[in-house]
Length: 486
Image (cartoon, rainbow, N blue to C red):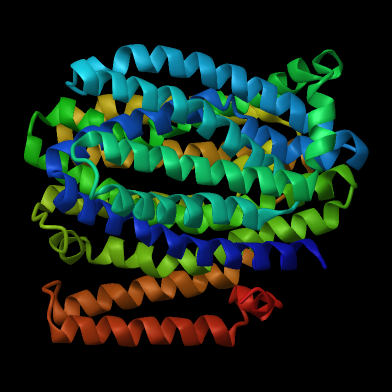
């Protein structure tokens, strides 16, 4: 099976796994009634701290292992996994102790509830850090579904079931925190099973028994720059909400902008679906010096990402007002910001999995350099444009920073690895997307932007025409044998 086919099948499995995440909003809606909105709010704040800090405590091992596992001989992989688990365990425990000490006052709890919060953090944070590290190690060994099942299905469904089961016995934030802890325990079980299938638990345990022989330092030197780059990218992609609040001083605009930011994150899911699968495939192909297949896989990922993300992105660009109206936001300024953010994300997707490729070919420091430069561009642009045009300027600066990150990565891949994820094969899908965008502008001029039967019918016809055009040109991913996974 060639690299492009593996990516297509794996991406399909990932997208199907995303459907399991619907259990989380269902759970939150039910728990708000069962436990009260205040109790749920406290639990959500605690969980937010745990999830963010666990990501930092992972030390970039989630991405580093995607390169190290395929680049290591099969009989040496258990030692790599053991080294990663040791590093994640130590970092997770230290982070949990610090967070448990400072979070209770931040979320406004005291007494016995503060003790319950501290205990939950001490259990959840290191367990989540280690379990996610294990799942990413298994993903490096091509067992992609373990991560999908663990994070996208078992975690949200386990959270829902545990919260409903605890409802008859307790009230307040504690049972919701217990539900979170039980869902993380379920992830840990999935991770243990996946580790056994991928590497053998006994072999990993044997490697853990001899920590002196493990290359923990070498692994961390590779992964930490990727972890820092993740944090910088998080600031680039999420920090603009804070900047808008500081610059505009208008809570309504800031909250509307936050909604717009959440809307465009749906476009990132398309990119992530391919990135999660491409990472181990790219590392393996690079180590095996199969550059032709690596180049094909990278170009296919860019093309498929553009084709799949374009319908949503173009609607966000051409009809931002009705999209925001669905969320109760009515602001021309925020509508313009949404259009700019969506355009930036579409270009991000179209340039292909540049940062992932750069990491998988063994250039983690360049990934960090690109992220820092992109954040600097976004901050400088926000400082220059924000005071003049407000949220619109911040959105333009954020999109510019995101594009700069990808352009820099494209330059490095071309100059250092002779890899070009973007080439003339992207012309046909780009022309289809541009034509679809022009058609949407015509629809807006003809029927307006007010939600009604005319607009809904026109958009449905437009989407059908887009699907037919893409299919006629053979651009859909399932032209490859992607149906096998379904």
